[in-house]
Image (cartoon, rainbow, N blue to C red; front, side, top):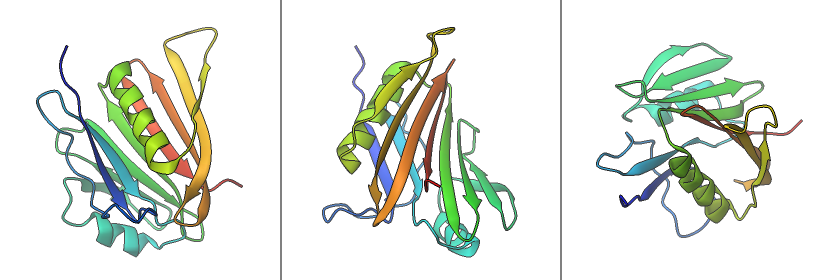
Length: 160
C-alpha cells in the first residue's frame, strides 16, 4: 500500500497555527496535494490575480466576473467567480482516486472543524457529493466536494 500525504496550502486561513501559502503543483511519488484556493471572500479580481502570481498555476482565461487557472499538465484547475467581490472558489482535480478524494475530505474536516455529509447518486453509486457549512475568515461558507469517474471538484462559496 502506497503511503499518501496531504499537502495543504491556503490563502487567508483563520487558525493561528497555519501560515497562508500559495497553491502548489500536486505532489509526485504517491503524494496527494490538496490545493486550497484563495478564500478571501469579498476580495477583488485584482487581489486574487495578485495572490495567484508566482504560483504553479497559469491564468487560462479571465474577466471581471470569473478567473480560470490551471497547472502545467492541466490535472488541476482553480476557478474564481465574482459578484461584488469573490463569491465562489473551486478546485477541480482530473484523474484522482476515491482514496485521494477521501484524504481531501479529511483535510477539510480537520482544517475547518466541519463534518461533511455524503450523498450518493442512487442511479450511479460512482457519483457522490460531500457537503458542509463552516466559517472561514469570519464568513459563513458552504463547501461541496463532488466526485465522478476520476474527477474531484471542491467548491467553496458564500451561501445566498
